[in-house]
Amino acid sequence: MSKLQPFGGKNFKPWSERLLFYLRSIKVDYVLINDQVPENVDPTGNYADDNHTCRGHILHHMNDTLFDLCRTYESAR
Image 1: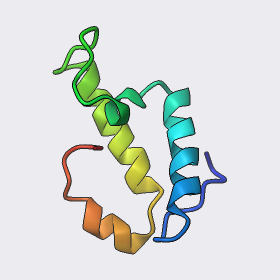
Image 2: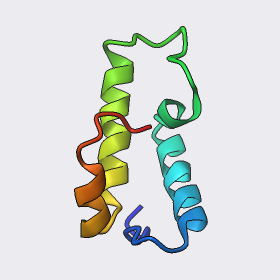
Image 3: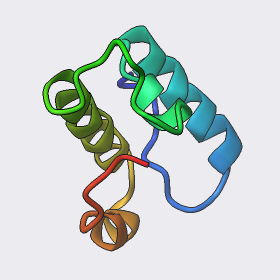
């Protein structure tokens, strides 16, 4: 994941595919993909933790300007 450059507003498609690949590898991509919480996931436990993990990774891989705009969102979606 260290080779993923911070997103600065250009080349969103390749950046998002690399990020989604990483999130899939750590098994938290369902937070972004599914419209509803899957039935086999506890919405107050695992889902909340996985949402926090997704949000953190997404924010970590943005440049400072986009980070400042997006940090107020509570959800990864």
